[in-house]
Length: 401
Image (cartoon, rainbow, N blue to C red):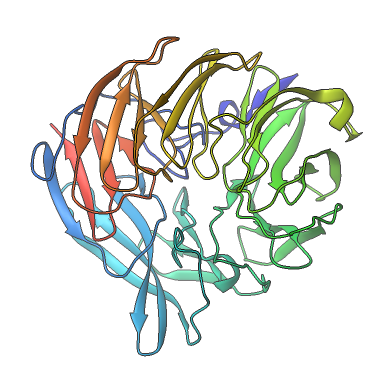
């Protein structure tokens, strides 16, 4: 038996509480949002965001949360911000940590790329090796953790995942990569599991996912030269698939008794692997592989029997999720980092330069609407109660009727 963890948790209907939504599946629920927008059309408000960050907005109880990194003196101020969803006014702006020596990052990255998580009255923010913190909804810091000291190489990109009171984080650095669980209540490390396979190049930037397989919670974490599943309680590795690759970014996707994931950045390939194995399942559980049009950064989107994805260079694809058979393969143009979202009965592809494409979820390709705003748009948007929250390099926009 395989169940998505989103079916088992008490999620906020209409809220958007973590990367790719409250079920981490890229699917928006609730009232429809406008299909058309621009710098002014259907924009309810715009709010300036200090510094730079590519963390996605998360929304709950009428508040929008973001992280950012603001230049300060010769260093950086790592910050969490809360905006009023009705007006766009900043409710609070809290420094989590001041970094004196600014680490180098990839040109596609920022120093505040991991997306926050909201649970009840807690907000969890993560800056990779630079620190993790829990805040309350008034912006008061409950705890901080700076123990995840590893050479992150190109900056931190992967978001944490929260399950059963543990903040689960992939720490694939330049050496000695590991996966770790932090207790959500006190910020202390619950377990730390070194990667079992040594990759030729060990750094990656993955966001994990938890799924229930045979009544047991499994943490899925793509990494250097392999994909591994771990027991959430103990951190024990349960099974793995070997596949050469590094700098892995997309979050795994679950459906039809399989996990779909990317295993390389330079030569991306999507793989579908049957769940339920033990040990090394490379030769027994791989169902299909696709290299043509595979993404390096955006996470795929599963809608029914079809898997939609877009390559970093702007090639969008639709394949049969069960077999990998390709339905269409089309160039949208531009470069892409944001993950596609299913909203309004359509698939939204958002490129890095403010261009968006609403595409019909079908076995034939059709663009329904194209939109454009000013600015760079690397962050995946959030959809809540008939509104879209879109982050650019300078502003946060609320799009609604």
